[in-house]
Image (cartoon, rainbow, N blue to C red):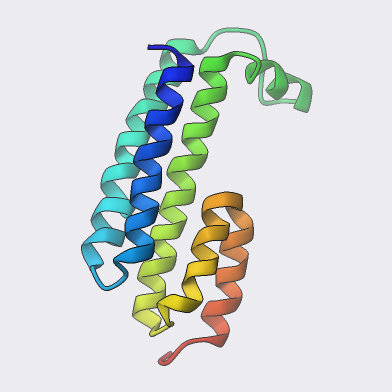
Length: 138
């Protein structure tokens, strides 16, 4: 398979987990098991395989130019993307679990999930505000 063939597969896997987080908030197994463990583990295996099989080329993490050079390799660019998919999903799963534990309305969490899915840290930041202002119990 090529990076271009793997890309839509990992995107679909992550998207399905995100949709489950959004539409099944009352099912703890979705946030804990599916989005919080199984799908990130699958993505982590893909990530590790991509890294192990493609390291050793030009580039480094010591400068922005070095990172750009690393990501000029489509396989490593895909690995970077899978890294984002896995970690953003873990953050989204945590947001849903934390909101449930704090009694935060899922309707208030949905915009946070969308932002976390699309812009990672911005969604987490929004959720930090929501969790401090929208809890039913401490």
